[in-house]
Image (tube, rainbow, N blue to C red; front, side, top):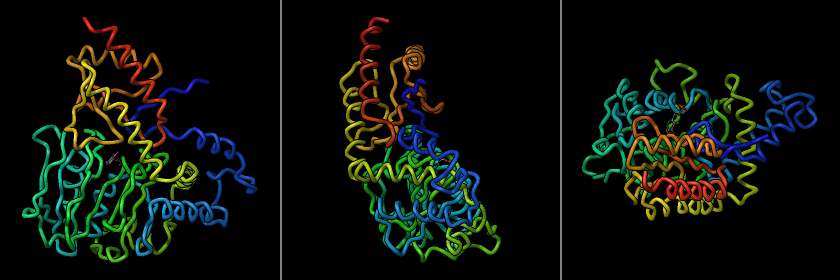
Length: 362
Ligand SMILES: *Cc1c(COP(=O)(O)O)cnc(C)c1O
């Protein structure tokens, strides 16, 4: 069996011990006599899985008691609608910062249900920076203020949060949750699809402050109401049972490793290895303004499309998969989520150095 270094932006690499544990427990979970996939979501044994996942998440990122944790389906993309359908009705208005395609999609969806104020955008430079936010442009009567903490496609992240006063801050953390410490109490709502940094596709985590629950429009579909899922502890209907189980294994792995602060220092080390080389080398260049660089998604280019293509194909042959950048940026992108080991990044940089030597005069 051969496993590659998988730099996919999502679904992405999972920790090997997690995959092994899932394999071990595939046919028979504990003494249940069945696979997690086969059990009732209302059984005692499954209850221990979903409640265990929630407890671990609460512990790992220190979620205050006045927040609910929901395990939903439909991906982060469904949250683009669910958030306005539940939150925008308060005043009919919301603030959005446009830092990439996901932020743009979120704002477009919200505009179907209320008035959207675009506070700032970095579209002018293909989203290669986080715009300065001038509080004069904030709507003090907004129902909420939406940001995308880490921009998966463009490789930027917020290093400071906007001060929105009493307006609840809502963040899409799909590609950075659990990668570095965050103060959950600074947010009204945090959401993340699991398939970047938490587990397999199929489950989306929503962390929501109690007072933001229960303000949905009358027309909001039942399945899109936070209060319904909160009241039923994410068991209103069948949740994505197996994805939640693997997510729990990932959280156990992270706890074992030492938790989010240990993970953060490993992530900083990994990103530094690659960024240092991009800054020093001649052939490969990062595309993002330095102060806004992501720890998770690192886009880079060479001076020509031909050389990019040659690199991507030779890297693939050498066991470095999914390095092709997003079609709107071109070039390459290395996604180095929590589960990517430091060795993977060290080996990638060695390979890039070798490629640079061999292709200097091309
Ligand atoms: C991947 C991603 C999404 C879309 O997630 P789905 O689960 O496919 O809907 C949204 N926002 C960000 C920041 C992402 O990285």
